[in-house]
Length: 200
Picture 1: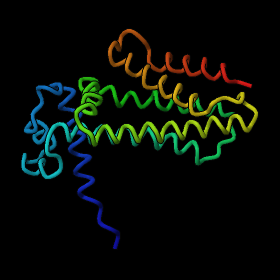
Picture 2: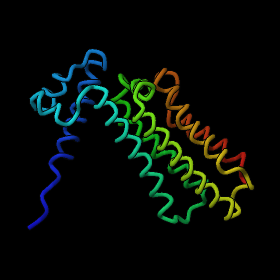
Picture 3: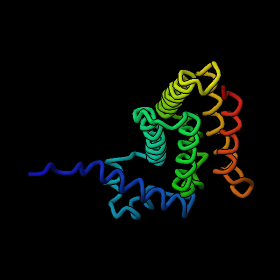
């Protein structure tokens, strides 16, 4: 017999997809838990078995998104790819840019991610650990470029922080003014400029 699927995880995904649709339609402030339950085809009582509040739903969405982004970086590190490291970083950057298509659906609540981190210690701790682990992974990738002779001997941690800041800062500018810049093109330009600065 094949193993039974994890219904709980399937139901959580169903709820999160429903929440994205409702938040996009109504905005975070106007959305009620009743709206999410209705969109998901569940009773309000069932919804509360999984998520106790809108903040809990937002926290789950945030963790899902950032976990997916880290998995992309991990796959680069584990693949031992043969392309130049600079090219790998550009490929990673393009993947992150494509992920913004998913994030666009969350535009009405993009700022709630960070607002929630300000009022929820557990979410803030998750983000702190995420960014720490993400920077460490980028630093290892940069160190690999140094060892291959592609990059100058630079402070890998500081360079990883700068690269992370480019990713997050450009995303923030895009959320504030999506018509004011093309996120993929601007991000790739910025990353190219950084890589030129550390090239051997």
